[in-house]
Length: 113
Length: 117
Image (tube, rainbow over the protein chains, first blue to last red):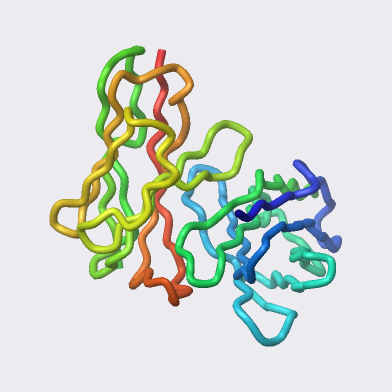
């Protein structure tokens, strides 16, 4: 079985500052890794995913994440945030050959002007 | 094109009643998933359909929960004898293929907020 831990429930940050949202996972098998974003009153939207290959993955809206197998982490980063990035971000895993996603509890990113 | 749609957007019911939640996946997507998101939590997997059949229903919490997808498109999640603990947002997602070796992106609907009084 897999599990996902998002270490911060809320992250406040000023506009144009860098941000890192932390995600650690636990699994006895190889996994795929995902970050989803949920804007207010909208459905979950895929930001980026790691399947294999380069450990640095670039996604939409200037976000990127780095897979670290030894630390079982997949932290999300953005060098300069905007007010419009205010949303809830979910890290998720699925096992290779599996279908269901296992999500973390989410991190609310609040960007302040 | 149209995304995943879910109806109703909100449903308020009384304890003990029966409810049905509907999901319309993206046209042509053969895989369909149901998740439940309780307050302050991430989505939790309930059931996965490949075509008309439930390929994995390991997430259904008990036998009060049941889902169908009779024609391989629209799906209905059915909850019998609702309890207050069933209150949550029920999310539906679809993906193009969803086979065991696939990493197709799951596209989520906006969810149905169920409140059991």
